[in-house]
Length: 209
Ligand code: SF4
Ligand code: SF4
Image (cartoon, rainbow, N blue to C red; front, top):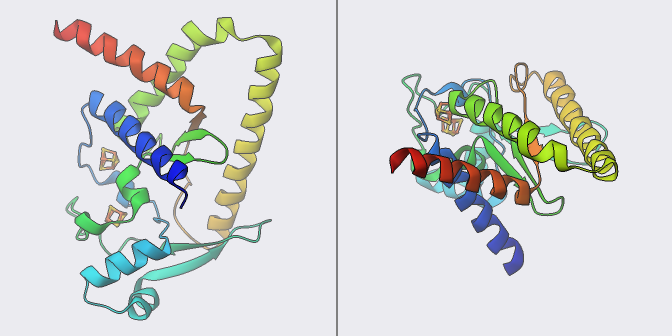
């Protein structure tokens, strides 16, 4: 991983985490562990396998599934559903070593496309509120200032993001993976996300003072 990408990932993690905390943080309801199948990358596989005293091969055989993504050459590695590390009492049994997508949930970001995506908008009670407020803020303060050209660019990006969402949903449905049946997501540029963070932080500070 290039150092630029590492810095980007750290910044996005801090920013998304800080916004989530402004809304009270994780409520530990466990909703995200029920319908989602976390994606696992090789370094995470090694980390989790080690914590369970398993070899990488043993761990992969017992807990992982490979899901080809329709219309692409990509094969995703996911934990089987329902997640075997969810104990049903809202506790993750591999909490300290869980995959990054679980740690970062409901946020994901792409270095290449410069996008922050919020997943599980209808699944996570905190994400539901954040997404609603982002949409209200956008309609009130951002949309009136957007030119026709910017609007067209935004719409074409949205179409691509929607298409990716559709492909993922279809692939997962084909593979009988539970995720995304009720899923809704929101995607935005990191700069816009940062502007919303500032707006929200000021609002919270004003209430506190
Ligand atoms: S690994 Fe842990 S946090 Fe991730 S889905 Fe499973 S139980 Fe939930
Ligand atoms: S759905 Fe949201 S609030 Fe509930 S455990 Fe997951 S991240 Fe936390």
